[in-house]
Each structure stands twice: as C-alpha cells, then as structure tokens.
Length: 97
Image 1 (cartoon, rainbow, N blue to C red):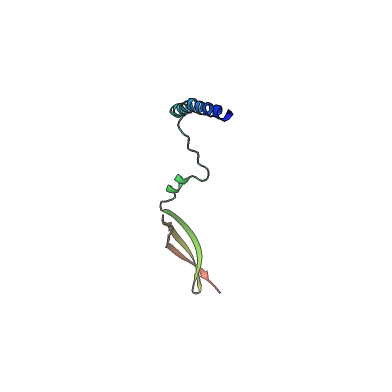
Image 2 (cartoon, rainbow, N blue to C red; image 1 turned 120 degrees about the horizontal axis):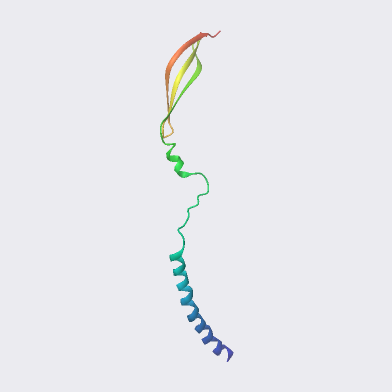
C-alpha cells in the first residue's frame, strides 16, 4: 500500500523539478563570462621564432699537415636542423713540432 502511494509522489516531484533544472542551465550558459585559456608548460608559439636562419661567426685553431692555422668560420643554422660551415679566412700560426 505504501509503495502505491509513494510511486505517484516520486513521479510528480520528478516532473516538477526536471524542467526547472533544465531552464537554469541554459540561462547560466548565456550569462557566463568568456572562457580563459590557460596554458601549462612551454609556450608553443615561441617555436615560430626559432624557425629562421641563424648565422654565427667563430674562430678555431686547426692543424693541416705540419702547420697550425687560425680559421674564421661562418656557421649557418638552418630551420630544418642542418648546419652549413664555410671558412672565411685562414692565417698560419706556425709549425707544429
């Protein structure tokens, strides 16, 4: 007997509360502020700045045969990860005994 009385009460309360909950969610999304994008970790847009050619000029001391040379070289770092090395000048320093 109690089950027969409780069943209509449960169905009646579900009908009353379900539309109210549905209406409040649509109203809340319309008033809600715009979403803020939070990025955790490194800045992904910074990679675009690294995708250009970089040129560095350096000197090194090398030995060719019996002689030592100071070479001025230009190293070009390309965006695809490769490097190009070219010798700008070579000055003889002396003999290597």
